[in-house]
Structure formats: C-alpha cells, structure tokens
Length: 130
Image (cartoon, rainbow, N blue to C red):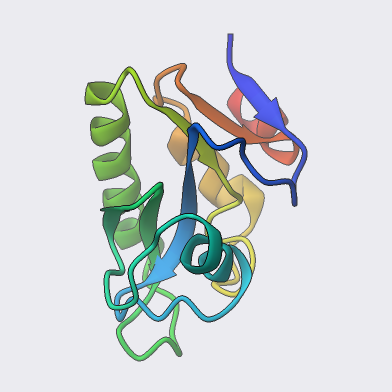
C-alpha cells in the first residue's frame, strides 16, 4: 500500500528527501533549500542523489524557466529506476514542480504512479496516485 505524508512536513532521519531542483543546482528556496540545509544536498548538483536527498530538475540552468514537462518526466523516470534498485531506502517525495516551477499536481503526480512502495508522497497527490 502506498504511503502518504502531510505536505510541508519533514522526513525522519532515515528517509531520503526528494525535491524539485534546477539544472544549475542552486538550492535557494523551498524544498531545495531544505535539501541543502538539512538533507545533504550539494550546491551545484541539480540532478540525482547527494547526501540524504535526491534532486529532480524542474527548472533550467538559468533558474528562470521551467523545463518542458516531457523533460521533467524523463528525470522522474530516472528517479523511479533509482528508487526501484534502492529498495532498502525510503524516499520522502515532495510536491516536485508544484511550487516555483509552476506545474500543477495533476500534471506531476501521475508521473509517479510506477514508483515502488518505498516512496511516500504528499497527501495532496493521493487522488492522482491511487
């Protein structure tokens, strides 16, 4: 059964924080800032794992423009593959792309339907995932 968490909460120490990023790896606000300050994200790394975090790019290198949804989808599929192989790790997925990148829950959440059960999601996404 899929797990959910309240939006705006933080994971426990054993969960990897999965957040929306930019290709420049400038983690200056929102969930990205939490990743930098609390979860071991590395400044300059805008995609993939670092520390107890995993970055999924939703904005371009300039941090001004959102990536096309099709590009974000490719990064989400890379995460799904990673999470599937890291079955011993729990992932705390934030509402990626639904803040500064300007996407809507109904655009992003369905892209996570194939994630393994070691991922938890914001309760707001339950209607899109179940």
